[in-house]
Each structure stands twice: as structure tokens, then as C-alpha cells.
Amino acid sequence: MSSRIVFSDIDGCMGEFVKPDYPDKQDLNGNMENLEMIKSKTLKFKDTLFGVCTSRSYHIADNIMEQSNHIGPSIFEGGNVIFEPEVGVYNLFEKHPKLKDSIEVVRGFVEWRKEMENFEDEIKERFKDAKVRHMKERTCMLTYEFEKNIGKDLFEFIVKNKMPAEVKDAIDKGVLKVLFCDIAIDILPNLSKGDAVSFLLEKYKIRKEDSFSIGDSSHSDLDFLNATGLAGCPNNADEELKRLVVSKEEKGFVSDKEHAEGMAEILDKVYEKWFKDE
Image 1 (cartoon, rainbow, N blue to C red):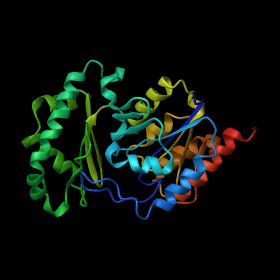
Image 2 (cartoon, rainbow, N blue to C red):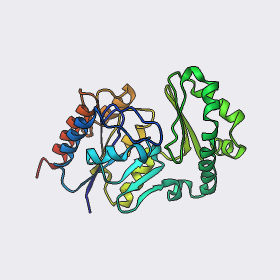
Image 3 (spheres, rainbow, N blue to C red):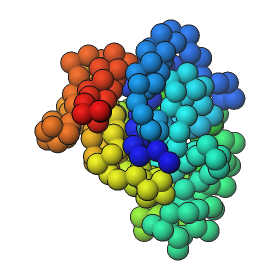
């Protein structure tokens, strides 16, 4: 069994990708060189698993994983979907103790999320200046991306016109959560990337100090980077996330390079820290 594990965010760390429209897969053109560079860094590590930790779905991440050699235990949809090579893909809310008393409520939300696809045209028309995009490939979170920050208004519209009372009640009780940023709104089960990392560390019997995470956004990566012993970020990360990584002192790595080049540089530093005495 491997004794160490690395979790890498995709967007902002491995490259600059344009997400495809469902059901298309991710186009890797323009990013292959970066992914091959990252893969070359991973191949130096001994007894180490590499996986991704992302808000993307597995559907638009699997080819990135393969090309970057991040084919180990991985986390998707903000901590709510897990991939394990020996098991496949599954919803974490079905297994995590945090939601064990709310499984039926979350299952109901997942079914309603599918129904929201029927209202995509109506929402686009209502917020046509924002160029709203429903991320249909996601399986247990409802995500809309947009070019104009209309997240709060869109949420109010959904609550008033489309959301069942039991879903709103689940949000109020903390079974589900709503995340806002300038370009997206997410409604999802109340699990995080950090919850998923801790779940996998325990399952694979890997000590926290033998784990590393790299991310770029305080919107979704703060508890993720706190869940591992070592943490890093490229220079394009936001300032709040950089402060967190810097606060870890010798256990935190901030690159002065951006995106994949920054990630590659940090992987070299993690390798040196873990294997310098071997």
C-alpha cells in the first residue's frame, strides 16, 4: 500500500482549460505540454498516489487525470463525488457519517437537480445579459456559471420559482449548502473537499503529514489545503489562499510561477522534502 498521497486541483493549477459543453469531453489542445510536464514530475515519487481534487465532474476530468498521471483516489464536485481505481465513481454522501441521517433528503435534491435541466432556456432568457451556463455534467450538485455576477439574483429566482420546500429546508438546516463567487453559484450537499480528503486519508491509512495538496482559490480550497500535512499554490492563486499557505511555514510552498509551471516547481520541492534523505 502507498504511504503518501498528493491531491491536485485542476483549473488554475494544471493549466488553463475551457470547459466543454455536455456531453463533450475536455479538449486538451494547448495543455498537453503542461500535463506531460506534470506527469514527468510525478514519476519520480516512490510509493505515492496522485489524484485530483476539483469542483469539476469526473466526466470532464478523466482525460486530464490520465495525461498528468493523477489516476489515484480523486475528488470531484467540491468533495461530493469520489473515484477510486478499485471501486469506480460513487457519491460520498452515501458513505460519509456527516450526512448519514440525511441520505434520503440529499437523494431528493439530486433528483430535483436533474429536473432543473428542463428550465435552462427560461433561466438563460431571464438573465440573458449574464450568459448563464448550466453545468449539466455534474451529478450531485447544481451549478450555474455566468459572465456577469448575478449569483444572488439567480438563487433568489430559483428559490421563488423552482425550488421545492424540502430543498430549501435542507439548505436552511445545513444539509445542503450554497456557494457564491463572481462567476458561479453552486448548490450541493454539505460536504467539502477537506471532508473528502480526510475520508480518503483514513480509508487508505495515510497519515496527514504524508499528504500534500495544491489549489488556487479560497472559494473552494481553504479547507482542502488545511486537510493535508503539506500544501502549495501557484502564483496565480488568490491572496487569501496564499496567506494560508505561507502560514504553514516550512510545510507550505508558494511558487513565483503560475499555473502548471508553478505546480511543477512545487512538486519538485515536495519531492525534496519527502525524499531528501533517501
